[in-house]
Image 1: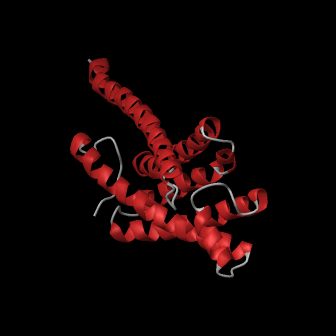
Image 2: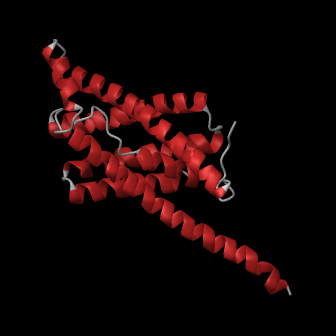
Length: 200
């Protein structure tokens, strides 16, 4: 009798594990599609962390960090080795996002605050890598802004950091907007029973 009572709980846990696996894979695919669109449309953002943010909010900082790292290793294999260098940045985005939304409500105020914090961290890390490894020019669309800043008189170091922060902040606002919409769809589909999310 006791074993029969435990069966629904076991089935629920198995379902949750399968759901997490599919969402993790979907998050990585979303990131890759975002990076591909940016590369082909020459957008001054990245869009390679939309899935990272989604995974971090739904499944926590560890899964978010894994999605970020896995994304850039995949991009490094399929789209060019430059992405390998920035894997740690996307991993950090997942980690920070996960911890922020583990403690705070998912609302507009937290999203804007999180965008600023993540943009600062991501730009500092990414710009340090860009400046030290690639002399500030990585071959991405964001380089257009860096070149424009150089043309108006900024030195390379300042141009890299300004363009890095601005593009990161715009990128995170767009990413969070997409995730916020996706959360509404997921909420309607799964009723959020499988996820611990603070919403107000």
